[in-house]
Amino acid sequence: MSKGRLIVCATPIGNLGDISDRLRVALASADVIYAEDTRRTAKLLSHLAVSTPMRSLFVGNEAVRGDELAEAVADGQTVVIVSDAGMPTVSDPGADAIRKIREAGLPIVVVPGPSAVTTAIAVSGFGGDRFVFEGFLPRRGRERSDRLGALAGEARAVVLFASPRRLPKDLSDLREACGGEREVAVARELTKLHEEVWVGPLDEAVARFDDEVKGEVTLVLGPIELDAPSLESAVSRARSLVSEGVSVSDAARFTASELGVSRRALYQALLTDDASS
Image (cartoon, rainbow, N blue to C red; front, side):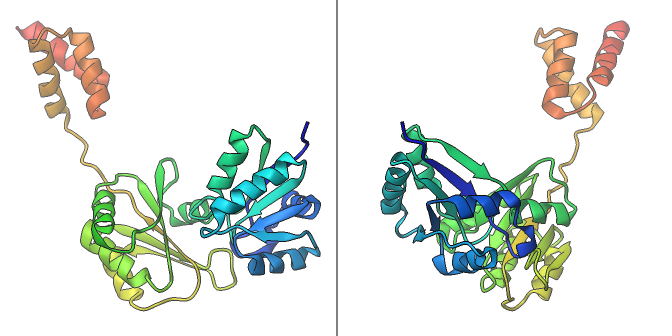
């Protein structure tokens, strides 16, 4: 039986001080490392004094490399996948290879680590109880306009990646779709020496970042405040259910769940209706 395994490793998003002991051991003990950019990973390995052989695994060769990688694990090798920064598969290659390993019934281990997504959510102050990750916006056409339209109505915080060159246009198009008052956090060079985090309305963001910037950029689009339905409108909705034969208890429960208002307040209002009829 094969003792090989795949180890999916998150790497620092900037600060090498974020390297974990588990990452160090995984890289040093692997038979081979598949890296999105072997030149960048070579710098990481040099910092750790690790000399594990490397192979490239990027979008253009992932299909072929995935088969090769699966064969290596099946032959008993310990194989590591890394991307340039953060976790493989998160707007980075790796998913195809992981699927093939999973389908072959071979073991997969994840070494977690730094993430620009959760780091940006934390530093934005928008809260991370509920948020969505959208990666990079489509570059052009209907796909881009459709995505921007969907984000305009998104009630949760939205994390986006933006290239330094396209940041001004991304912010401008987000303002057009979402309105100038929608808040956004612009996080640049997270964990690095020149880290910058700016938070404010899209109107101000467009003016501030009107030219190409340096470094990696993560955006967090603030959630929109949905207008809470009034108790009066909720009672009206519950009354209509009662008039259709729904019990007072069920009408209060259904409406409270649907509109997010107090079930007890609805129930008391409906009981008052019964008492006065």
